Length: 71
Image (cartoon, rainbow, N blue to C red; front, side, top):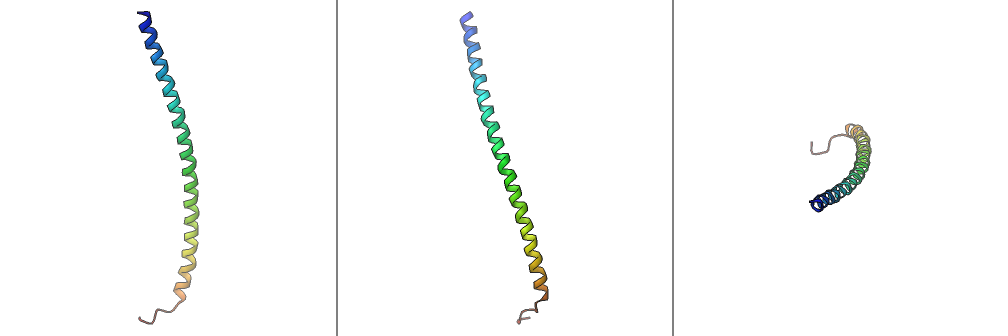
């Protein structure tokens, strides 16, 4: 009976060890994804600002031009 209890305890310790390792790997993965997401958000914000400035410069120039000849 003692051997069975020791075997069960050993099996539980092994499982907990695997779970701890898996959680550490998942935590590292989430941290990497969080950093990547932050960088992507910053890049999108920079692109949005650039697009607004391009739209602003095109919008004023297009209004000053006469219509094309086919109008």
